[in-house]
Image (cartoon, helix red, strand yellow):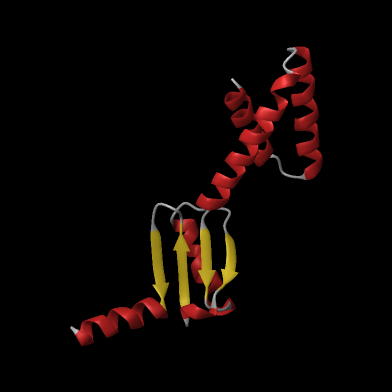
Length: 124
């Protein structure tokens, strides 16, 4: 039962736009638990929330760009892949281009990938 509460709370918190809205959601949640006399489940709900949060961090889409020059192209491709909110980080090891990792698929348009593919073709 605590997993259902945690999942519902997690979804509400991630949909909240700012800290004030999240505070309202938490206040309403605590009132609900107290009303249903289920405050003892709070620690289990908290640990399940931590687990869900960690899982989200591992599967959250990641966009890596070689430099700011590639940011616009990377964001356009991410949007085309159905990713609306993505964090963009700079990774100079890509040499050029960008890389999008959704957790289930990887789109690699980096110069590093092109150079590795070319090297493998030439050396075989």
